[in-house]
Amino acid sequence: MEKIVVAAIIVEGDRVLAAQRARPPATAGGWEFPGGKVDPGETDEEALIRECREELGVEIAVGEKVGGDWPLSPGYVLRAWFARLVSGVPHPHEHLALRWMARDELFDIPWLPADLPIVQAVQDLIPEG
Picture 1: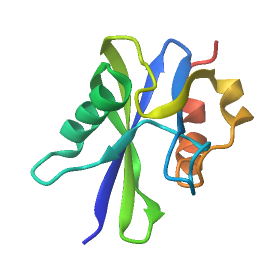
Picture 2: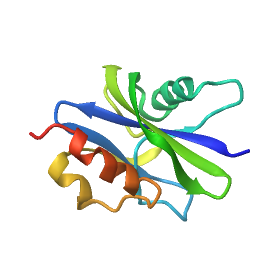
Picture 3: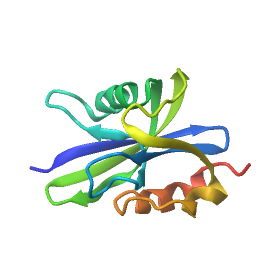
Picture 4: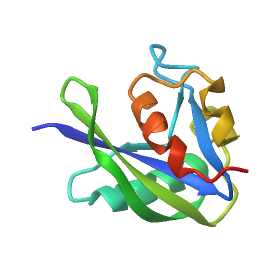
C-alpha cells in the first residue's frame, strides 16, 4: 500500500506560499508546497493541519482538493489541497526559507519534480494580481 504525503497550497490574496527544503541532502534547496506524511489514524486533512502547525507555526483551513494522487517516489503518492491561513504568520521552522509568490512568479524558483505538476495545475486557479 502506498504511503500518503499531503501538501498545502496556501493562498493569500493573489499569492501562494512556497517552502524551500532544508533536508534531506538530495532535495535540500528545492522548493515545495508545505506538508508531510499522513500518520496512522489521521485523515489527510488532519495531517495537513498538523504539518502546517509544525512546519510553519500557523493554523489553516483546508479547502478544495487539487487533482487526485500525484506520483511522488516509489511507494508514495502526493495529495494537495488549497488552504487559507486562519491564524499565525508562516515561519520556516523546518525549511530554509519561505516565499510568497504571485502567479507570474511561480516558475522563478526550482520546484521539486514532484511538486511541479501541481504548480502547473494550480497556476490558472490563483488570482492575477
